[in-house]
Amino acid sequence: MKSANRSGLEGLKILLGCLVLISLTGISGSAQEEEIVGYGFGLKEYAEVSFAIPVEFDEMVQAESLDEGNYSEGKYVGASLLFDDSRVSILLLYPCDLAGEELDAFGLVSALTGFNKAYDQAVYSEDPINISGQQAYVGQLEGQLILVYQPSDLTVSAIFIDENINEEALDYFVPSLQIKVDEAITPLYPEYCAGIQTETAAPAQPATEVVQAAQPIQAGQPAQTETAVQPAATFDKSKIDAEVAETVERFEEMFGRKLSF
Image (cartoon, rainbow, N blue to C red; front, side, top):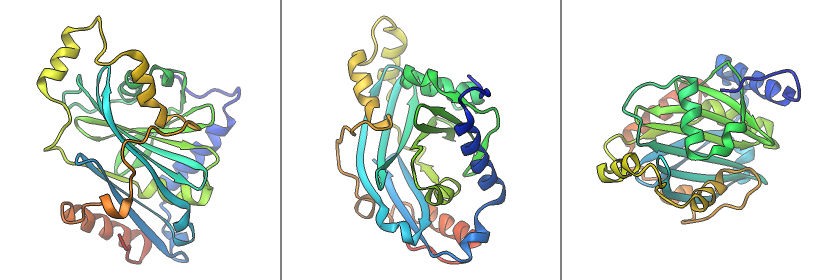
């Protein structure tokens, strides 16, 4: 994993410093003076995503795309949102070679570069931050901030954030983000992964298709929309009542007020 150096990486250091501070101290102090609104939506049937931002930024957030597909080492599900003109993309990877082990920083970054080799050029800090109780590593590639962590034993998630995102919205989005993976459901099936393992000479899809699948995750690129994501419509509240209750309880403790999902 490439680590941060002094030449040309001041932006990463500043962003990392802010994120570490947020993850260590939380945002309960400022939240006492803020009205918070919660968001939730589904990554197909495989996971539920929730986060919160101050209510004054409510109209800033717009759903953009929802996508699912194959890549050369597994399958993926992804969604992208617009915070005004800044894109936030959430990628959930199901690598075929992930057997339930906890990955270190190198393993997490390797899983992401297995999805798209372009991310091998990202520069990462050695210091992790906290996302939902899990260690996440912060990277930067051109004008894009990358957070990579493991929300479940069989998945790796990467969150891609345009650097020009509103800083106050970012201060709330990162510490409140939760990805609840339904471990009883997976897009992988044995024959698919067996084909990847035995047909090493040919990827599961042509390389050009893999690049196209990754485009929604690239900062500044138009999303390849499969289905429009409308958080209010795709958020299956009945399916994850327990998870929502847990999230609301956590936010009530953090913010001292209730959230309206």
